[in-house]
Amino acid sequence: MSSTNRVEVPEAKAALDKFKYEVASELGVPLTNGYNGNLTSKQNGSVGGYMVKKMIEEQERKMAGQSTL
Image 1 (cartoon, rainbow, N blue to C red):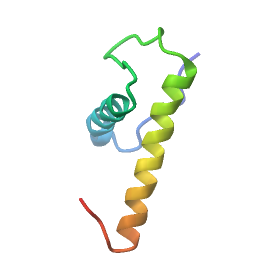
Image 2 (image 1 turned 90 degrees about the horizontal axis):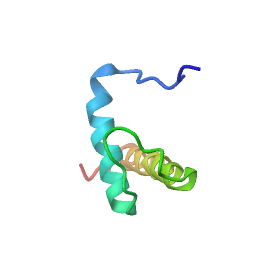
Image 3 (image 1 turned 120 degrees about the vertical axis):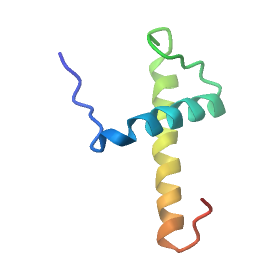
Image 4 (image 1 turned 135 degrees about the horizontal axis):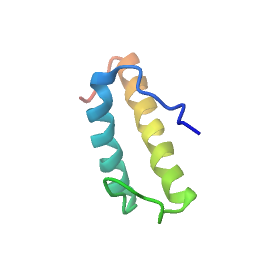
């Protein structure tokens, strides 16, 4: 079974990977490059969920004209 996840903008893949590891570090999830089958679904889900939360917050700031980046 192949993954249906794909990056719409291939140039963004490296930035998304870097962001993923930053978020994992903030949450204390021991994410490594490569196999992470030792992590729980809760740990992996928390990384993805927090990434989405941070992206939405940043977009809301931009839309309000208050971007901090």
